[in-house]
Image (tube, rainbow, N blue to C red; front, side):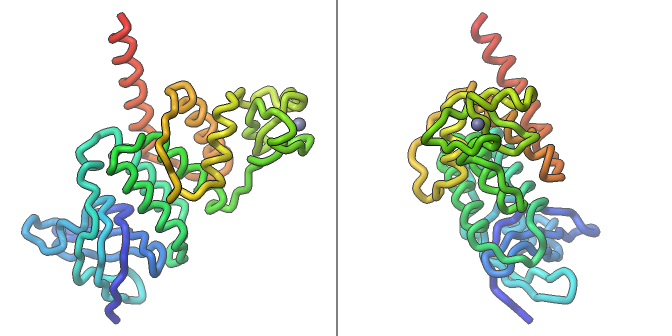
Length: 259
Ligand SMILES: [Zn+2]
């Protein structure tokens, strides 16, 4: 049976001499795998739509196992994103996380829309690092986890009534000034980080305005989110290693500039 779907390429794996297995997140069917026969050959009709991040319209022949790709048309290639090494690295994190977090053939139109929007923002030049942290925060409930972002995990006081000063990975939420001592290993965080995390968790990405986040704030978001993922998600992200190397390089260069 032939079916047309809209999808984003999450992963590409070479298969045999000339084929590629594509993992797609589709609007209609959720995550699926399809074989693009001959797509490794440069003159193949399927080559251009079989690249990572591509958002396309795909005609697939469904089978009991992997489907076969009959046709692929690019809707959006995210060209500017591909030409930027930093943005590409964060986009890789987005698609890898999606691939590892989402079960096959479980439809989630919300997630599809979210991934598309964020890749689009990256392509338009919005800070890719911040967009990656938005995605990681929004993916937490998709993983079946429910951190406390609205009240202190120990005493239950709400964001309006008390000041959150740290995030406990162990307890899975914010701690207020009074309760921060219950976890000595909690992350001390600024008011800005509290605000951003709550915003990332609750807001609709369609309404994303201009975002400017300082390097220090990004660093806090990064350590906290990765520590939380390490503790609860069971997901190891290959793209993270490269990002860490990139950050070290970035720091090294800014140190050099200061001298
Ligand atoms: Zn408290």
